[in-house]
Length: 93
Image (tube, rainbow, N blue to C red; front, side, top):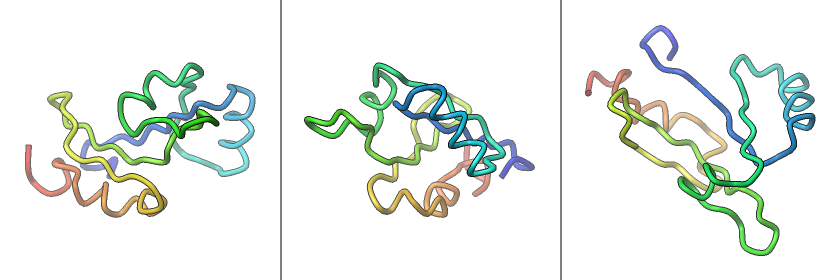
């Protein structure tokens, strides 16, 4: 994906120290950004009621800044649908 101009970025409502530990344990080759107040999560996939945790989502944003695809819930565990929807990978714009 990176060879095609794509970029993976994780975003989480967890505390920064938790994210550092998670990224280290996961060996994630991409940054994980903190969204402590849930602003980004609310704008894309939303927060779970009562517990205010972010819903799992893979969001594909085009080079034009527009959202091209959103995969949520248990389907977001597998990034393949989001990768398939990536315009730079499928030849779209």
